[in-house]
Amino acid sequence: MHYEGMLFRPPSEAQSMLIQVTTGCSYNKCTYCAMYMDAEFRLKPMEEIKSDIKEGAGYRFKRVFLCDGDALAAPTAFLEEILDEIRDVMPFVERIGVYGEARSILKKGPEALKRLKEKGLGIIYHGVESGDDETLKAVKKGATAAQTVKAGQMVKGAGLLYSCIVMLGLGGKKRHVQHAQKTAELLNAIQPDYIGVLTTMLVEGTKLFDQAERGDFDLPSRLGMLEELKIILEALELKRGLLTSRHSSNYLPMRVVFPYQKAEALKVLTEVLEKKDETILKPDFLRQL
Image (cartoon, rainbow, N blue to C red; front, side, top):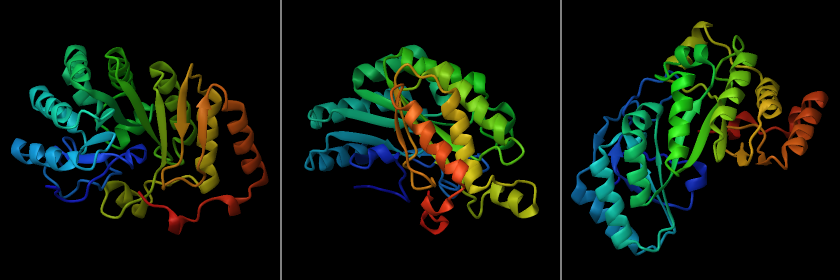
């Protein structure tokens, strides 16, 4: 396979064939992220991509994930050619996924998204992070909550599965409650099929790390992170969907099927917070991004 650099994929794509169609991230300005700091965003040569698809066919994976960060930003025709090749060479594939940001989703528009769906794209993973505009501005996310809602609704309107990624603690202690409340409001407006919860980690080399070193940003405590998750769960009203906090950055892994398991999940969180027993939480040295 023609892989370049370190590849990243959602936890739910752990059993997927990874096909790298772009390198780096099309935006690469978020203050908390170090994933693509040293990588230039560019399209991989089509001949390399098709060669990887042919090689991957021998492994008969049921799912394919198109890397790297925000590969949806690639031209629609470029992605259509890749999707056609996957369907021709790997007809046994049941789902194809990709990362997409608000900018690339909105730029694609409804018709292009529908065409990609018809060509075989099945799910878009969107790093929403927060629904709080002040937090989004502070971390230089590059999209407002309103733009994010519009993008999420556009994905669902095209018939694609939509997986929202949010980050506990991203507002710091200063926006602790607002970040959680506004994030729940955003999720309710979109009604995503899946919600993936991560917990903010300060990564050396990022601007957020430097802000924390200077005392300009304070992460909530470990229990404070769970308080944010409780606020989100309390306000979350999904008609149907799945929320998970099984990413390795989290202190307490949970899997909540909405609406059926909401009360049970809140009961667990409430007990942990009331007892203040941190021994059941994952130690920091075991957490990773």
